[in-house]
Amino acid sequence: MNSVATTVSTGPIDERKITLKFCVHSRCNYFNPAWDDCYCCPTTDRREYCHATIEECRATCATCLPKCSP
Image 1: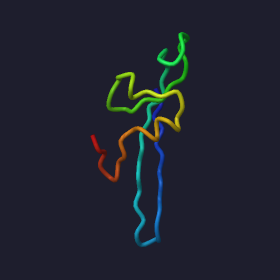
Image 2: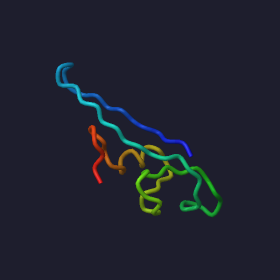
Image 3: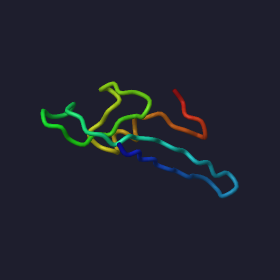
């Protein structure tokens, strides 16, 4: 499995904050009968936390700034 993290920085230089979103690249059959790429939040293996695209995963998974929310 591969992990993908997204970093977002906003605001003036003296107010910069780093935000991390982790998505685990995997293969699953949640979205079609064949095993295909999917992206899941790393804290669970439940289907509702897996997504067909990395963008959907990033929009759903917990944010880490600097600690991850549950």
